[in-house]
Length: 255
Figure 1 (cartoon, rainbow, N blue to C red):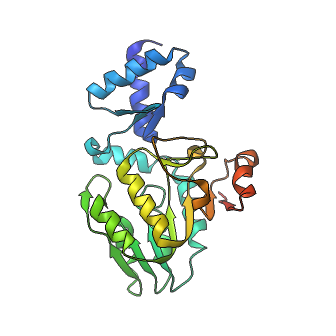
Figure 2: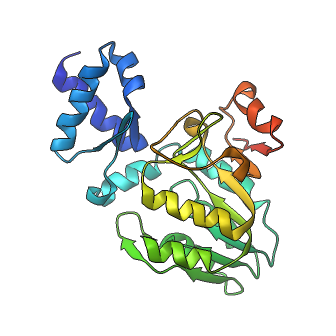
């Protein structure tokens, strides 16, 4: 494959899944690590991605609404099923923390059918959906608004999360693996996830199967921080065996 074709493939891939790994690209193109790293550095200079340890991530600060829509449409059926399953774990009157992500976004419409919830979230869209049921009380965290992702971020956002104590926290991560635990690509996201872990009695990870075995740059917690996991039907029993052996309750959402 020619260099220009390789670069185009990488750009499309990172827009679809928000990150790429040198290891995966090397195997796909059958080239050296150095070749892939040069490609990524060239694309970074063009402002199309940001290089991190072991690969590159999509630069969310320069994303536009079209590109966020691409991200939302990545594995939509799986994310929908995961959130439908997650809503079954919520009882009327409970208090929740929900961290903004394209995985947790479908949860809003299901929780709008619940009553008397108290929800702390940094997602503007989730907040609007859940509060459409007037019996629900939604606390939208303060912070810097990331318009392209319709959420608040930053130190103030983490502070707001830490002010409260809730029954359950729902969140997704960029990577989860037996060896490296829960990982994210940025310190900003990692800090919010630490806050969610601290504030909740029960922590529920919502991740589609593509995130298992992935290791991102920032490790913010071990697997033991998770009490329950919900994923999709593509995951194998072998992949899940480690988590179930640790006593984590794992749900595989149906189509």
